[in-house]
Amino acid sequence: MRTIHTLKELRAVLQGYRQQEKRIGLVPTMGNLHEGHLALVGYARQAADVVVTSIFVNPMQFGANEDLDSYPRTLQEDQDKLQAAGNTLIFAPAPDDVYPDGLANQTQVVVPDVSDGYCGASRPGHFEGVATVVTMLFNMIQPDLAVFGEKDFQQLAVIRKLTRDLFIPVEIIGAPTVRDDDGLAKSSRNGYLSSDERSRAPVIHQTLQRTAEALMEGATDYAELEQQALAALTRAGLRPDYFNIANSLTLKPARAEDTQLTILAAAFLGTTRLIDNVSIQR
Image (tube, rainbow, N blue to C red):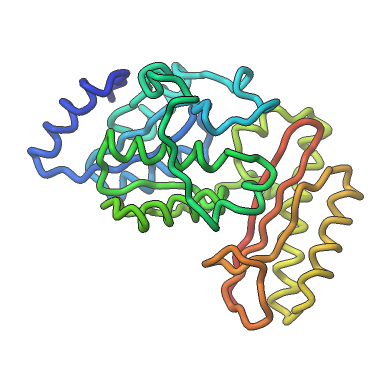
């Protein structure tokens, strides 16, 4: 496995693989890797000959008072994990190389509609940062496919729309959420939780599961189900951000006739914001 820091070197290496007609897969990350990220690498290995994992803590997707400065930079540990996972290349550029003119002067990619609501409402500008850096990575690496986790369901919807709308020839693969034994979705931010907070965190997935069961049993009073879920999270000591039942394809509020549903949730434990979702078809 090889770690590359400059675009010039990356393109030279990838050109060699393309001449060999190798299929190239991309796994975009911000580093501080866990089992969820490594599962994405596994999916990419199944679909591609060469797997490029990018490690870049993207300042554009962090808002004011978010954890950009404290976000863990763990390149050596990440390299060891990716080596064991069978990754081919790491692309770890410096912020000044990605944004040489600074964030204020950077062209941005805005994906309307699916960026609205949920995390888009709670974190203004977040999805503009995600969409911009992913578009840049697509242009820098020019992969045949890219793998994103379904845990960030709204983000996956944003990436799919921008790829479709801008006619970017990259196949987008959504990989299932990886969870701990108690149901908590794997996340880099789980490391911020105290032991007490960690013990309470699984209530998010438990509440999603109960709501999904009610929907499968035929419940259609979505507003009531959402209020019940918010109350359950609050009783468990969390501070809910949102809990919504949506159409899986459009992310619009679900209607009684919708058959593909996704329940999206975000809540704070202390200062740590956790997200999760469950999708069903009925």
